[in-house]
Image 1 (cartoon, protein in one colour):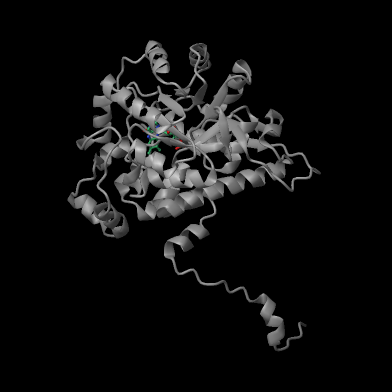
Image 2 (cartoon, rainbow, N blue to C red):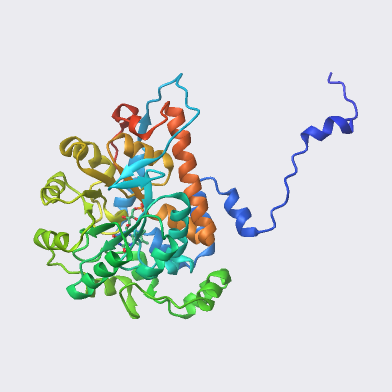
Length: 408
Ligand SMILES: Cc1cc2nc3c(=O)[nH]c(=O)nc-3n(C[C@H](O)[C@H](O)[C@H](O)COP(=O)(O)O)c2cc1C
């Protein structure tokens, strides 16, 4: 029989775990998010459907994106034990300069549509943390404003070669003048991918007030309040467009762009040039032969060709064939710092995150981006420690096995 007695107040004190209340609801919500997936759930509640789906969605049946995320889940890490892992250094050298972490913020279009803090929030956080911020040709903040938000840090500019060449190159000139140190030329968009969620939602820029969007706004007043009471959306390179995003992009993307154009762009750009959207070993070799400084293995976050190669699967072979001399960057599907560690172990020099940071932005503006980067960097450091590694250069293919599986 259990004998019972009355608890003594002195014994209760150590059991009480009352925390100081956090009155800022956004801060409370963000602090409770432990993973990027948690931020995604918050983002979905707080963002109108069309803007959330534009960010979260991919092309056609969205299989490219599902597979890319699954590929990161289908790995096995091989830790080394009994190592002193007290001090972990995540500093690294990428494309001619230092970075504090092995990832940067990927270029994304229409970012102020997700949250009015937009690109400037990402650039502020990049400045504080010491990682590069990449601004898209379809950015909703100007080249100069983003530079001002990250004045001493690394700013990268992403170029789409429009049908209107002069307009594209005028942007490049502004990026040179503002001191951007890397040009990412995106090459996986001869035409826009079929983002079916956008078509179904009638996603337009800027968002139009229809009966559906008004009803959708009722549970998300904060987003609309922000949109209507801040600087109207303006674009690095385009004007108002009444149609859907895909229709707009199709009027701009140039299906005639070839390797010769890439060589020509290289002549115009004085700093590091990186080709984004490489999806085969042959193309990787071909652009490296042109003398570019790096490549991004990427399928555009699954937003272009559906059932495209998974960049993470492609990585070990490309790294083996191209060797240490070529800087290989990788994106698509990264949802955790452990994914980044796995990519570095298998030969990536650097990684970029798109949605992982955008979920944070939608969940809480700049504070949400801070939280996303904090989650990713915490996961990187913890994974390195658990692997018995204190420096990124000590990560190697022996730390990771890829289990090949295709979902669906
Ligand atoms: C909402 C959104 C907009 C994007 N816009 C661009 C863009 O304008 N230019 C570009 O090169 N890539 C763009 N991308 C692709 C990203 O740069 C990156 O390749 C992709 O997001 C990586 O996959 P992840 O979202 O799984 O991290 C966009 C991605 C998203 C999610």
